[in-house]
Length: 427
Image (cartoon, rainbow, N blue to C red):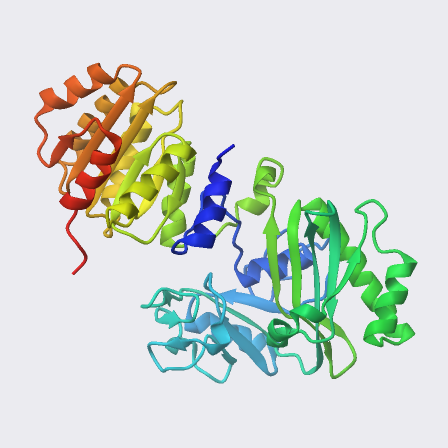
């Protein structure tokens, strides 16, 4: 059976990078730190202690700021060496560069926040022009004696949660992936004595250190289970110069199907402009896959989407997206979807390819006409193919509308060829 999950996997393997409708909750670093210690009432002022803890995983004391004045106040309160980190949804901040002073997105607090707030940070994972930084996370610096990697996720083949550990944490983990220790455990049994003994033998922790490590692991399991996590990654978990273990950074993945149980958690979701586009479409009940071309597609069904992409590619075109209207969409949802596609500056042509079964072609046609009226007509070429339930009625509605820049092509392959021919190329 072809699904949108399988489409995402197929294009990730064989085509340009995409962002699939099966979204992953993305948390900024300050949210991750708060989750590790479970802050019920986040800090509003640096001197505030109005919070309660649940998971109590050790993190540095830190605060979120949005102005240089707040940054100065936080540094005064922390009263010691501090780290300042740009809060953007992108990795590689430490090696990135601001367009203001050329420095990175992770630096000692001696650097001025005025050179970070309101400026753009470019990393290996951001768009070419970078991402605007509107908030900073400042926390007390930790002297690092050693970095470790601790993570929990699921092994789908063994249908079991698995603990991944390494004595080479931080950026070193990328070169030591093959040396990760894998320890399988049960969510009901948690961290057993056998797991503790293995970790202590392999990583060389003392008995005193192992007590702290055991407590951290127990709390990780609790968080992993209670928050419906699919990934909990502490990287690095460091041993400080004073012998304390501290979580400096964390990465999470959560079960998207648990949104109804984790409303507070998913309410923290931060979205890039591209993700906001997906979010709006998901709220309409529409499936969306973003690609890297310039031809927008509105289809119904994952299989038809795959075939549409293949034919457009065969004739020399590149798809900008797939938008699946499914079988129960409304005219209002489709009209809004058209407006969203209109705002995508990459799109220079649109193919509407509908095979009516549950969804009626006349309803699709009504939505096309209504969207065109609201937008003052289509500004780019639009090719429409309607087959199936009420297709003749739908085609008649489109013909009577006399819309400019819109043509009807009943044959599938000719429709794909026509939109490639009609779509202006990138300059």
